[in-house]
Image (cartoon, rainbow, N blue to C red):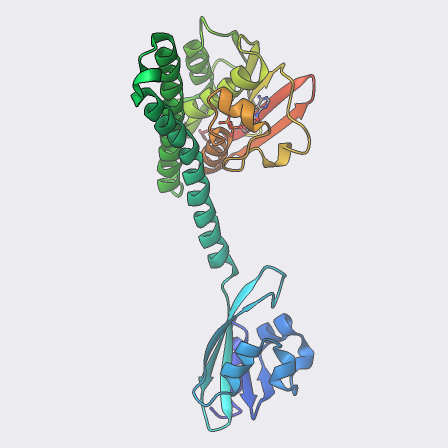
Length: 328
Ligand code: ADP
């Protein structure tokens, strides 16, 4: 590559440099933004302090190396070196940070899900083995108690699998705009009705209807999860207030408010993370999976809405979602 040709690198978004005899002869703007303008003229061992990348650059055959922390602390870059002349090397840098972090969060997710399944499964196996022992299994009272526990643990796994399947279904359609015509006021009454006889749920609306383009099944799951959280963590019998307010700004605000103990401020920013629980033993005892609010958040995002949760300890919790109303 001629030294004039090297200036074409300036048009690339990717950081690129020309190294001649181990020295940075040219760096495009992206490379200078990443490594500093001072690298031009510098020895490559100073410009990139990573030994494996330097070894690839100085070798006769070129190659590539992964480098951590070139831009921000957690960043991961690939330094790729092509031999373009006896002493000339073309070095390009690719930011792999996002790919690496997506891969890591997938791996974490699978590890978490497996861990969540392993505990109830180990309990089921343990209780079955005890029941197979004629001494324990022969005692009717004990047998019934153990069978009850086995059923409870199996139901926990069932709830977890059903939430995992919901998450994956939501993930699969996340780029498709939802297209059902949904009246949020009617939907709120319908979902509140499912709790009739078990808990007190009031629905209040400022208009007789609030129509949005949505996914009916997913939106009812949002309301069901939020009301169910009030049942599980606030008061089992309620009251819960669901409010639907359509505004002239083109948005509808839906809130679900309870009068429970609330969520501590240290937990609040994290409750929508997968498997995050403010109180793990309580969540497990009431059949929580740690996925309910993360499902809510994903559904609201698919609807191009916003989800927020506020809580005052000792007073209660309000979960709110803003959704765009359907245009005329
Ligand atoms: P889970 O399946 O455990 O209920 P969620 O994602 O629905 O998971 O909620 C995450 C955590 O947030 C719960 O484990 C609970 O500690 C807390 N939480 C959620 N809703 C409420 C609420 N209305 N009142 C108090 N705590 C709540």
